[in-house]
Structure formats: C-alpha cells, structure tokens
Length: 389
Image 1 (spheres, rainbow, N blue to C red):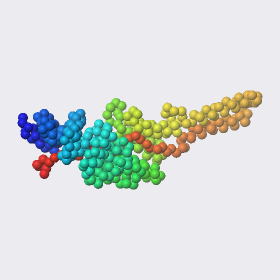
Image 2: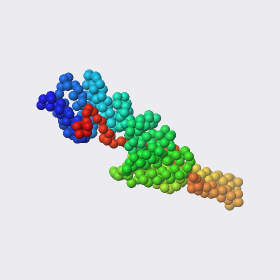
Image 3: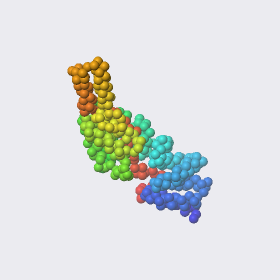
Image 4: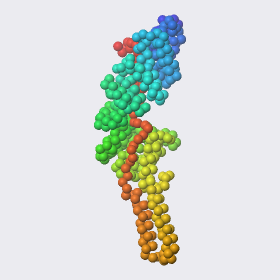
C-alpha cells in the first residue's frame, strides 16, 4: 500500500466516525498508521491518532484511546501550530470523557478546562465539566459550568437536572425547583435522577419554610420515580437508586410524622444500599433514631432502660430502708413509693409513643446528578462527510 492510499484511508475513517461506525474506523486507522511515517506525515498521523482516540473510546477500548491521545499530545509538542492546537483541543475533550467513564472527575476537569480554552463554545464540554465538578463537591464551579452549557444551547434533561442539583447544593432552591421542572419537561420519559432531584429540592424547601406541603410534593415525585428505577439484581439485591429513593421517601414521611411508614422506608434503604455507602448510613441512623424512641431493639439500649433501672433501684432502696427501720412492708408510705415507681416505669414506656419524631439533617455522600450519555455529543474534527455539508 502506498502513502497516498494510506492517507485516503484516514479520510474514509473520518467518514466512518461521522457515521458512528467505530469498528470500521479503527480498522482503517490501524492500517493507515502502520504505513505512514510520523516524521514525513506528522499532520496526517496527528489526525489519525485523534480519530483513533475517539473511536477506541466509543468502543470501550480505553487503553488504546489513552495511548492514541498521548501520541497526539507528543506529536503536537514536536510540531506546534494552529492545526495541532485544534487537534489537541479535540483530544482533550476525548480525555475528559474517558476520565469521567473511568471515575476520575479530577482528571476530567483538567482535560476539559484545557479543551475549553481552545473551544469555549462547546456546550457538551461545559456540561460534562459541570458534572465533574458536582462529583468532587465543587458546587459553585459546577453551577457556573452548567449555566454556561445552557447558554451555549444544551437544554437536555441531564444538563438541566445537574444544574438543579448544583443550585440546590448552593442554597438557591427557587431556581433549583424551576430547573428541575424544566428537566422533567425536557425528557419525554423522565429518569429516576430527575424525579429524585426535584423530590430532594422539595424536601429542602419543606425544611426551610416549615411547610408540610413540600414534603407531600416530594412524595409525589418519588412515586413517579419508582416505575423507572433500574431492575434489582444480585442476591441479596442491591441498588443505590432504590436506596436513595427509599431514603428520601423515609425522610419526607418522618417530617410528616408518619413514623411507621418512615421506618419501613428507611429499612428498605438500608437493605438496598451497598455496604458502607453514605445513603445506607443516613438511612440506618434515622432508623435507629425511630427504633430507640419506639423502644424497638436496634442494637442499642432502648430509650426506656435508664428509667427502668432507676425505678428498680428506688424500690430496692425503699425495701432496704423499711427493713432497717423494722417497719411492715405493707405500710402506706412504702405502698406509695412502690406505686410511684411503677408510674415512673409506665411513663418511661409510654414516652416514645407520645413524642413527635422529626428527622435529623439529611446529608449524603452522593448526589442525584444524572450521568450523561457520553456517546451522544459529537466531537467533530476536520471537514464533515460530503453528505452532511
């Protein structure tokens, strides 16, 4: 194969990428790169590696994608110029997507920030940058990036949902509610993420304004989320989405003083959550609080135990004192003491049933940010195929 044919293969591979025929693109690029010398065809090799980075990423060949991206950066450093800068910006975007897929949001922030310096109008890049900031707890930065994504034209349900979550975390509940409702309208079949985000916004509003109506609104959103939750799998079945929805439901019910229902919801959250997850710990803490108040065994001493011990000690001391004085144990004074102690025990048992329970602060390690479909955003390089012009 000659060099001209190898260069033509790169053009065909680019057309395949536009048609999302990633496997065909990889085969063509492998052949072209095997025939071309980097020193004599640095621009063609640069573009071929950039396309290979994208195609390999889309087919989950992450190591190949990482290596091709590294080759692009190395070649661009040796042969700088406007064309190289454009290709590097493209590869930075791919690196950002890849880092998010590998669960490395800090790396994604670095790559996407560099990419956006060259292509600041990329709405998809701003959206993923906002998601990355959300995942590391940088909520102000997340809000700014997601606002920019919306300004650049990204009004997808996922981006609006993530913006609502960032606003909630930053305390702007009014706009968070508005963005959450926009996310539901933007999605023909709203995901559980969108419903759960709006439910949590309503819970926060109920806490702030002390209005039970918001908790009822939250329960309504959670009821809508249940049918679209992912299927439970495993033995025993574990699911963080199910655990989160159950936790939010338990919290809203607890605020409405529907304690029995709240306990069942928290128990479901504990059993559905992964070991050691923040969601499970919050659910367990609230469940233990309910059980202690209700006198149900939860691994801790019941709330009435100190009362019972005190009453028993009082009776024993009274018996001892009466015997020392040589008095009859059936005397009126002693009977009154025993009766008072029994009343104390009765109050101890009844106390949990008359105390109005309220949930404590709802804090979790995870948020309801919606992971984007990273394969949906185009990353174009070079001229589009003839049919798309």
